[in-house]
Image (cartoon, rainbow, N blue to C red):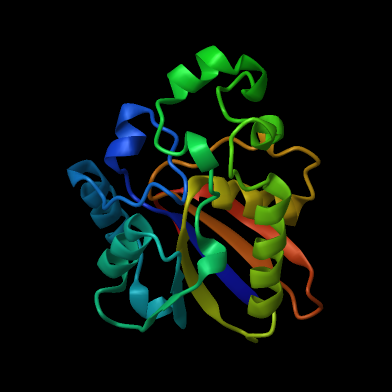
Length: 201
């Protein structure tokens, strides 16, 4: 059975200031983000893992570097990149919500219809398709523990795929440096082990 330990990157300045933080916003971790990841590292033994995969974005790469401690090759996979919010990427979420309230749910997350309004935006369906491709590839690994460093919306999308939740709005965003565990059986069936932990991994 394959075990995926999916880590959301540490905090960036766009997280802190409440900006829409997609793949077109490519920042390093801020000091808080570095501290969050270092705290996680205290509860994670990198020697327990067979492989490390990461999104190509700077915040995920830096998170992976801190956790990996130079032990494994970090394999960059573009399927793990954050959703591209198009023209809204990098804008203050409050400003966008004031203009397009119909594109936000009651938790102030963007709804799937947002891509009808933001030019150049990636659809939620597109994210699910590339992540399913990633899961399919990981299912062929045999008995491995794999660390996967990515993003908030991507983590929610992984959980939606595994649980078959009809609406991603039912899944709250994980905290920065939170870990989600997914198991893939030899038959290819997926299971959610836990969601959004910092300890007891």
